[in-house]
Length: 316
Image 1 (cartoon, rainbow, N blue to C red):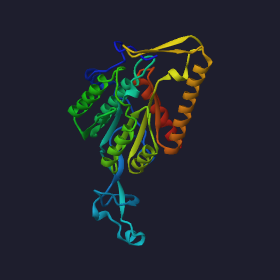
Image 2: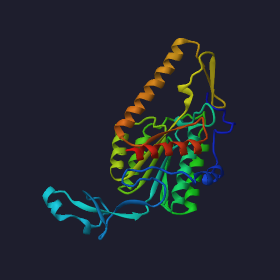
Image 3: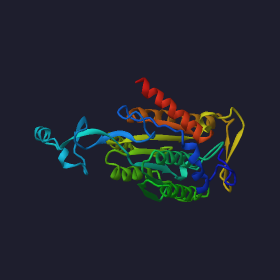
Image 4: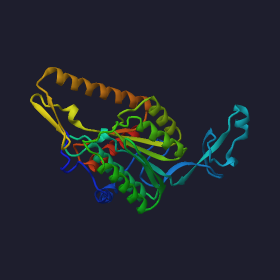
């Protein structure tokens, strides 16, 4: 059942998000095989330069140094190509946080919107602690707030404040139109900034994803490291066998009569279809998609998921 708006876990404050800094210190994010780690500090990444280890040839991208263009390959393929070398460098990170009305649901510990906010700040504090620049996008059903990457505590605290503002604005009394198209809109905004060598962390339940969402994420992952944190509530996975459930957002309530077979079957069918859809989408994307439950503390499960992902990466 959705939590009452007066209870803990419904909304989160700037102060609570800032206080997550200590819990973020031992997080380690895996990365592509080339770099071995995601948020564990300065990475080995593609840099343009001379006297470095050659890594690959790739298409020219806006902002590349024209001195690195391989003119022979360019002439042979009729497409500008650059020689990429490996060097230790920092990289900017963009954290994308979903605070739409579809995230305003939670059956146990917290709303999905609160869990997403916590996960975002854990990532932000860890990135800053690694010496990299942090920025991102916070979006709801009608607004997308952009914060350019900076390497400062003020930048991270500014991100926390923006997240908290949108989070506390969520209410069961929301009468607007759900912003399903906002997911595509924010993904397009990210793609306009992250041309290459960025870390992009999407934190959402991915409700409303489309073919355009998939294509944008695939395009981003071609020259950046992309991680998807899938926020979910276990309610649909563990329905009570009988009885009624009252869903409440404070002033509004609805009752689900689970003893009625058609009601239970409809909910079960929705949950199965949603699960199959997301698993298929994940396989198609080929990106890390880590499930974060609203029923558990965010930091411990994020740490556990990242360690498991790192182990799988080493086994490859």
